[in-house]
Image (cartoon, rainbow, N blue to C red; front, side, top):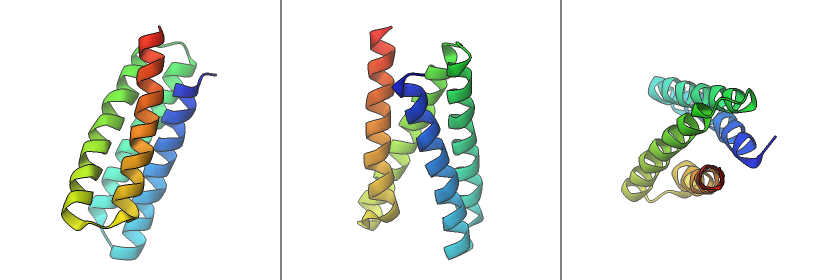
Length: 105
């Protein structure tokens, strides 16, 4: 198992947990739905990478890149580190791992 699989899986789980926390704290159905969908897509991307499907890495990169942009915009608007700043930084790290795997192949 390579680092891009771990990065996609970990960021996916983090997105799901973040969506659940957003729903619990603010009753935000949008947080729950978007966190669940994006997290599930990342977990599935990790699974397909594990199965040897190269498009799993492409899916993980796309979903992670979209999340980084969304959280960076949210951070710029709210200027609050939690959760947008943390998710932006972790997303950029995960994206860097995934892209380095992509370039390495």
